Length: 220
Image (cartoon, one colour):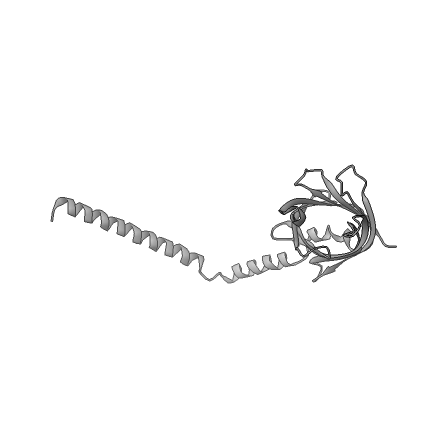
């Protein structure tokens, strides 16, 4: 056997040995990760899971939104600075699933162009949503569906240090403009226990391009 062939075979053997050693080390690491947790570890994991399951301080910040409300909606079809379309409505929010989520039901009207005349006319509008606080991800979230479309809206956000201002971000399609995933911002500002204001901004146009504002006043 030539010297070159011996050297080549030795190098191959060394590579195989190193590969097997790496596989064994990896197997040992996997085995350690897959080992059965001790009773104390299991108890600690269960305690952490139970803690994440329960309503928290994050949920308490949403409490001022619970109840029955009279709403006044303003929509700026021509953008900020134009004359808004104003409609009235009602809203009811209540805790569900043991205080973990807020369910919202809205009945109001929307001003829409009449298909025959082109004039703005009042159209019945219903919507419903679920919002809450994710203890594990440490963030607020929500979903929304309504009678003016077939899309499901999702949004995520946070609350400022005052506990009074919630800011969410999400996407919204604009079928008439052939736009998918238009970025929007939602801001819910709690004035006091009997009043809060919701605003929607079209970030596709600009940070301060407000297209809707709803003022909620608690029913007496």
